[in-house]
Length: 201
Ligand SMILES: [Fe+2]
Ligand SMILES: [Fe+2]
Image 1: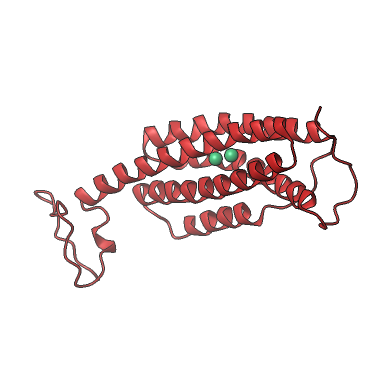
Image 2 (image 1 turned 90 degrees about the vertical axis):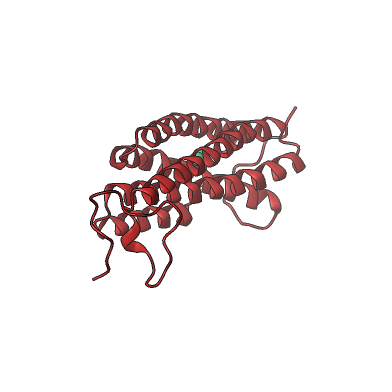
């Protein structure tokens, strides 16, 4: 039978304290992410991206439940932790909106932001799983493993979507205005027939 963790004030003296802190951090992160995903799905112009975000919102709800099961198995309440990393990514997103990005640029930005989020989650879960295994918390380790696998799949999916949309955007030249001065056009970046040549102000 798994040993129950004592529920007491967190003092950050032992690797177990760190484990609980990091579990609290990802629990806070997932709750922020589950709120961000529907908004990101709505503002994206690409249907596949929208459904990827919607599907991951459902997965994230399951991930939150898995984390709650972890806390239950450990016999503790989730500690109060603020995940400043995901809070920061949300702030970056909100301030980017003020620059009035085009639909395609906003979609690409959201895919970038999702990739950053997934890699944060992947690193967090990998570290947590290692600690859970070292502590002999097998049930926790397997719940966290389920979350990790979903994050890995999502990271791969958003990167593929970004690659496809990015290439499409380059082809139609809609990102050409962001070219650096003196930069050679990318292969396939020639203006479409009837399209205005790209000039910088
Ligand atoms: Fe997640
Ligand atoms: Fe995720």
